[in-house]
Image (cartoon, rainbow, N blue to C red):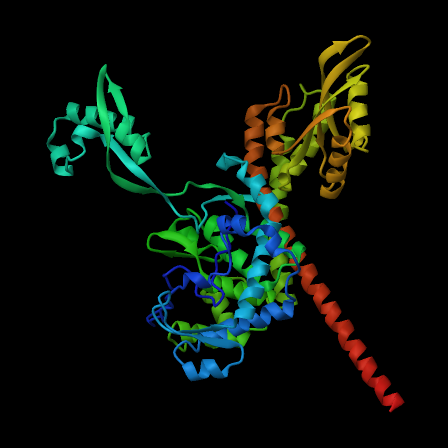
Length: 541
């Protein structure tokens, strides 16, 4: 599944859990599923990405909608105030809702829905790339190991040995150990039949004795963990796509719930931004999501968030927005100076992790490696440290020898041999020319995504060759180098994964800094232009 930004348009987050601080009692805000604006992958697949085609709302529109959501929710018990607010609407109790409530206008909801669909579409390719990774140890950098926080478990038939399915736990405990072991083995043989009709018709054999299987009810199987887009990567991609603050705040929440907070113990959960430990597990903190939206809105909702938090948590303890950032363990980045401080911290961590990974890479023996493999090791290691994948292009073509086969492959892509590494083997010989299979790994430091896409399109358009293209984990390619030291590579792999995570996050912060700086520059130019127009008006008055 894609990362599902399933957040409610009025910030009624679907989790029934609420955050408590100190002795004050929170107001419980019931979730209303039909107002969830961020769709799961299944819904998106049905709607189709075409429905989401278009542009995002402006930053100002998105931040205004966010402020309206906070304001409307605080009017939940005040019908007159809700109706009087032109940004809100009063929803009466119906078969869908237990109580009447106040929420934002339908137009605002729809505008945000399309923005969320655009965001989901923007992450499809990266999501698919992460899902290709099945080993947790390989899931790092742009990806992170976790579990879709909005995925529902699958109900399956509990298939057991039919003649014993009515045994209670007490009856089973009264059996001798040999009988218990035999019955357990019989149940395991039947358990592979997870559909009711298949189970009822199934038989199994244990120690030469055949027996019938039968249903003993059903059980919900929790979704399994998988490799998903990391929080930092999702943020940087959505920023590049032009996603609005509210969308990115929702993505922050969902990535936190699905990846960043997943599996953390109580101590590490409390130390991780955006996470909260409740009911024996670490999950996402909805206040953290709101504070992150506020960061990306440059603090436009500072005072409103303080009012909202005091209302929501039924307290008067919060007096400044910085109180909230401290309480909910979220970095305050709502000003250029605060964001720059955070970016500097992330860059420092990335530099330290990168240095450690480079040391581990330097410890990989190269004495027994071919010169071409030494060069390949260098750029593959750099890619691993930066959290990048490498493009692998496998081509079958005719050539005079292995050298010309590699040269021709690069030429067909509009590239040179300096842009990557190539190996060629003979596929078959035909008269004077032989058919060769070449494998090219493109160096991402020299061939960026745009250039790589153009190179792939160029060679795939040539009907004289057969080409397959995949994105590969650079560490996997390092492990495949002949005579490479496996132990040293394993050590490097661990360090590279840590460096990749840190570098992806640091890059995301640099992008946020650039976006805030650009917005400030535009505002400054706009202010100068306005002043100039005003001055001109005075001159010509």
